[in-house]
Each structure stands twice: as structure tokens, then as C-alpha cells.
Length: 172
Image 1 (cartoon, helix red, strand yellow):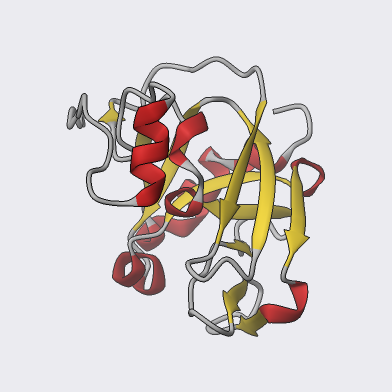
Image 2 (cartoon, helix red, strand yellow; image 1 turned 180 degrees about the vertical axis):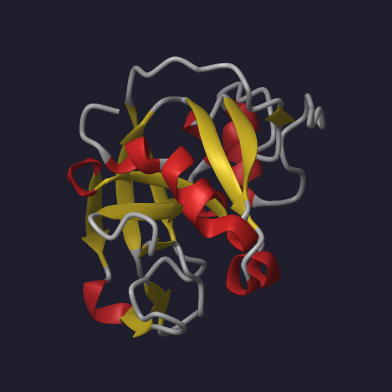
């Protein structure tokens, strides 16, 4: 499926958008294209945070991101866009004491929410318990040049997990 929702103007009406526009950031974070061809793998450092700024982190990943949209109950309801990385490419900069955990179903996934604003900026995913799953919507858009969204079908979890097994490998 081809999603081509491109915007040439950054977000309007917020501080981060004005900052992004001031340094020439050309696209909104919701720029989507087809997720079928491989993208560049050179990593840069992205910075992210929760809504109240109590939790901050950085993650090393390409500027053009391949992300997943899952149709499970919690992801569907929250609009989470998944960037799964090896734990070695994720750094919690502040806020460990502000995080609370939530588990459901098998209890394998550790959903970590800011206790102050309720945002889940990252978590330990069931599909990759040795990795970290970052909510792309919590990343500063200034370092993101493109998003390509692929579907993760929770109704066929085994096949979907097998298709993305490589994402938490340090070699990826």
C-alpha cells in the first residue's frame, strides 16, 4: 500500500514547529511514503521526550525512518508508531524515576508511561524483549527526513514478528 501524504510546511502554531521552520526543516513528522524499498542505514542521533519533558531520551537511527503501525488494541488506540532498535542504540537521559510500568496479556511487553503526563515515549516490546521500541511521535521532528510506515498485523503475530526479527540486532 502506498501512503503519500506529504506536507511541505512544518507544523504550525507550536514552539517546536517554529524552531524547525527557523532552521529550514522542510517536512512534517507525518510525511509518509511506501515502505517497500530499503532506506539508508547511516545512523544519526534523534532526541525524544514525553509531553511534560520529565522523560528524555536519545536513539541512534537513520534520518529517514522505517516504522511500524501495529493493529493491536493498545497501539491502535494510542496511534503509536514503532521504531524498534537494539538496546545499545537507546539512551534514557532523564526521568527513570518518572516512569511507571504497565503489562497486560502475556506480560512480556513492558509499557513505560510518564507518571506525570501519561505519555508512552518508549517501551520494551513483546516482539523484541531485548530491544527498545520508540514512539516516533515523541521524537523531535528536526532530525527526521522521512517516515515510511509498514503494517504489523497483530492478528498474525508469528508471521509479523518473524518479518521484523532483525530490527533489534546491533548489526541492523
